[in-house]
Length: 229
Image 1 (cartoon, rainbow, N blue to C red):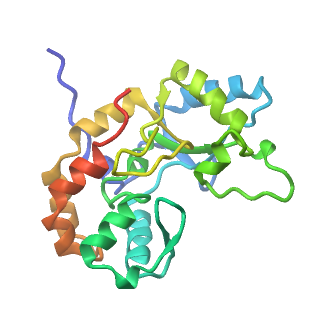
Image 2 (tube, rainbow, N blue to C red; image 1 turned 60 degrees about the vertical axis):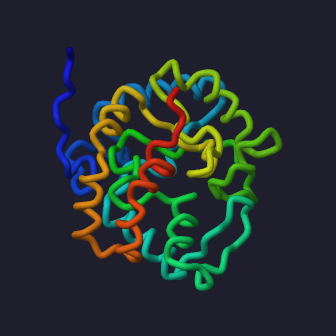
């Protein structure tokens, strides 16, 4: 029986980036994924799709800032229907579930691994359009319809898949989010509730006690509740 070697906890949790290859000053991906991504990018280019990464590796501190700003209503939060929510009227538990629909728990983001990317094609946007990373952009009437169709038919040839291919009652549908299966599945298997609990306890996350109380629920509904290919 093959047993996967233990990954560094700091890699799992987004606390270091030694495993990351930087494509630019702001965009990094796992160094073992570079070849597959570049091959997919080249294939898309032949179909006049200029595949780019809007977001690749994201560290723990960055995810923590996103979380805390949403929890404290510094940053606006939308419902699954796309409407702005007044977070000040919610209990801590309600805030947590609302945030988790679109943003991962710090320490549990797949972007920590460098295996997951948010993609778009700038050449498919008109001069007046600006990337928003919203589902309608990837629909049949959206600017990225061609990109979405191409990825659905071709991304698996390069090892990629859509972890959030539909809404399952946890994380919202994210048609822009691709995961590199050969690596991501190894990280997923080693991310445990106990490891997350220890990390959350040591963090400055807003709603800490409520997060810890509901961590099993969060793990089931918002971390492993994904497309299993």
